[in-house]
Every structure is written in structure tokens, then in C-alpha cells.
Image 1 (cartoon, rainbow, N blue to C red):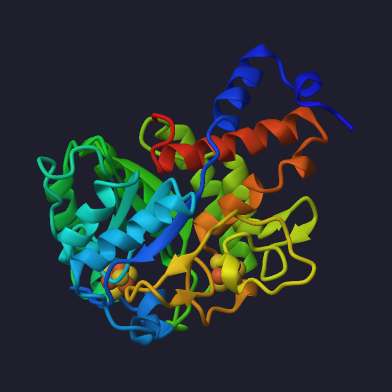
Image 2: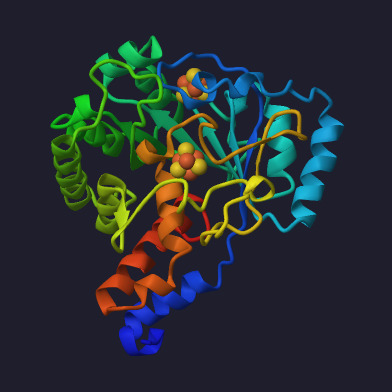
Length: 332
Ligand code: SF4
Ligand code: SF4
């Protein structure tokens, strides 16, 4: 068995040491079931998760729930929905108690006076035409104006097969707006015509993601190994899917044998009692899941498998660093 010291030179060893101190314990919270958009392919609405439980309306219940989550060991609250910015008092209850990341469609600007250091991730589904087709309006133009130059904000760009060959136009606009971007791939939960992945499209999009990282290294938060994993769905000869997924709610995880997984991870519904199966759609076919965070976490929890060669361990470090940057544990 190789050791970390035998595989890494001093510079890489220092990078390894920096992330091995982090001990990330994240969980995901549906802040609300409501949204000011209804995107085709949104996993939350397509899987009926918005009807799983009613919103808890009492802010004091949110505050005591978050205190209990903190006591449970959570050190990163990932807020999703619905649209969290529709209920900023709930967002603030998290932000005052825990390091917080807020996913949003960017239509409502989060005040930096009220939330100075909160990480904001804006969902982006393509260029103006794609967003009109999938989300009903050109959301990008609004979100870009709202967050231009904000150094705690990045776009979470969900690439669809239709955008192959067209991503640079968007990434250049993001760079020009002084913002960052992280890429993931659409999972076509609602079977929208023309948005299915083929092996050829996955090969092409991987090459394009690599090229974007190379051309815009100060804008794109990513690494080549992540592109490989998410586009092939394979890691160390094993396919991603239910048997491997690390992002399953711990209290609902009855897999036997249990794979390596995120410790204490739970995805909570907005009633603060109900839990969802995993970080994304409860009804999604795991064999076609392209969730970016689940793929990143899959790498992260499988360090031992990456102790074979120097290159493998460096790949693991780069994915871990990327995750740590995306959730504010280390600077980008
Ligand atoms: S903005 Fe987000 S939560 Fe709202 S419908 Fe679109 S993908 Fe779903
Ligand atoms: S849908 Fe994706 S994230 Fe959810 S359990 Fe399946 S593989 Fe994991």
C-alpha cells in the first residue's frame, strides 16, 4: 500500500494537508416549496418533492431546528428549494448560525449588507434561447445584472446537449461580469425532447469542459478529473449509481453493503421533519443521474482507491479542492 508521503512531493503534500484539515459535514435544506419560476426539468417539481411536506412558517421553529443541526455536527448548510430568496428570514436564520451556501435562480438580489459573506450559487441553464425554452424567460440577463462583480457568487451552469459548441459565449460573459462558474450536466428527468445525452455528446462535452477550463482558468472552478468522472460516469472501473452514490440521506440509507458515503448527510424538506432520499430528485433513475455534487462527493469519499499512483492522488486532491472552493472552505 502506498502512503501519501511516498506519492506526493512537498508542494502537493501541502495541498493535501490543507484539505485534510477541513472535515466537511454538509447537509441540504429545502428552504421553501415555492419558486418564482417553473423550469422544465427541475428535479424538485418534476419529482413532486414540493408536495412532500408543507413549509414550516414559524421562524422560531427554523431557528431551533438549525441549532439542532449544528449540534448534530453540520458545518455547511446548503440551501435549496424552491427558491430560497423568497424567504430571506429563513436564509438569515441559517446564515447567523452556520457557514451557508444559498442556491438561487438569481432573479432576486441578496443584499450584501444583510448577507456579506454568504456564498451564492446561481443556476444557469444555457444562453438566452435555452433559458427561454427551458425556464420561460431569459434569467441570465437578470441574474448577471444583479450580481455583477460579486466575489462571493458563482454560476452553477447546467450544460445541456444542445449547448455543445456554445458554452464559450456564456462563459466569456460570466468572466466579463467578474463572476465565476462551475459546470455540471443536465439530467433529463422530464424527458424533454432533444435534451438526452448520447455517448458521442458526452465525449464532446467533456472535451469542451476541458477546453473552457484551459481558456478561462480564473473563471471556471473545475478540474479535468471531475469532467472525466461526470461525463463517463465511471471511477476506477466502477459505474456511478445507487450502489455507489455517497449523497443519500443517512437516516434513509438501507443499502447493504453500504458504500462509502457522506457522514451525517441529510436532505431536509421545508417542514423540517420530512427527509428526501438524496441530494437531488427522489424519483430519478440513478443510472442516468448527472448530479455534479454527488459525483464530486463520490470521488472525495473514495480516497483509498486513489492511493494507487501519484496521478490518481493528485486527481483526488483537485476534486476535493474544487468542492472546498465551491462551498467556501478555501479561497478560489
Ligand atoms: S428556479 Fe430552480 S427551483 Fe425554481 S423551477 Fe427552476 S430549477 Fe426549480
Ligand atoms: S438520483 Fe443521483 S444523487 Fe440521488 S441517489 Fe440516485 S445517484 Fe444519488
